[in-house]
Amino acid sequence: MTSPPTPASAPTSPSARIPPTPQARESSTYASVRRLLRATRVSRGYGSGHGRVAAVDDVTVDFDPGTLTAVMGPSGSGKSTLMHLLAGLDRPSSGGVTLGDQDLNALSDDDLTRLRRDAMGFVFQAFTVFDDLSVAENVDVPFRLARDVAPADPQWRAHLIDALDLAPLLARRPTEISGGQQQRVAIARALVHRPSVVFADEPTGNLDLATGRSVLALLAGLAPTQGCTVVMVTHDPAAAAVADRVLVLADGRLVHDLPRTDAATLSQLMLAEVAR
Ligand SMILES: Nc1ncnc2c1ncn2[C@@H]1O[C@H](COP(=O)(O)OP(=O)(O)OP(=O)(O)O)[C@@H](O)[C@H]1O
Image (cartoon, rainbow, N blue to C red; front, side, top):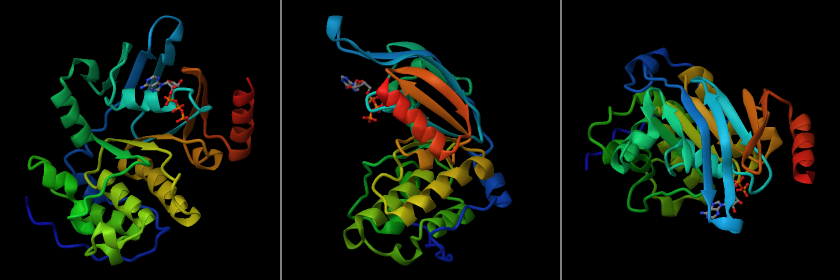
């Protein structure tokens, strides 16, 4: 294992948005590789015969670099399954997913793992932190796992630590910080390698209101300032209202594809979908 970089000193405003950092943009290996994420007629079924469930049913959708898309829908409508297919965490029953010119179906499991590690970031409610590493070392796990990954951009790393209010915690162990703080560490780690695509599943679900807002601001800032493609599954209309676009699933099918929409309208739409 390599030793961790010197912790960045940074102001500690939790609500700070990520400003554009031109130097950071130029020095990243991956920032210049922004690729269209595309699902084409993708389906995923579970079970067989009468018990078969079409978790995702013939969905075709593109996600442009530099956009934040929220995925909404009633419980069981296929949001998580679709996200897992887009991320190559699951393979479709039919149809395909491409990231740039890479067809995820054509990749071996090892190549898919490498693609996820290099090009994707995951902000999930179920997160992992390593108790035997400090907070700073946890943030730098992507670079510790793979020697061929370009080292952390110090400015970008400092921005994340600032936005997630981690500066005072860098020397501590996960056992010495709260669950919400641990989640912020996991979020910093998910973004520190400046992924092309970020998948977030209920990213604010376990967080207090203020931290949830700063995490949303961070995700919303990734698309315009970093050219990142962000796909966020959420039940929360207020969270979805920050997105450039809102997809609504029902019974595995894509039933609405909306431009930015306010929270009240999204609430009404969700009530109507649940009642259907
Ligand atoms: N591994 C599995 N085996 C069998 N059925 C599954 C499996 N995973 C998901 N399903 C089914 O597929 C459908 C879609 O599930 P999915 O988790 O994608 O929905 P969701 O919209 O993310 O739900 P929620 O909002 O409750 O998390 C559901 O009917 C679910 O029961």
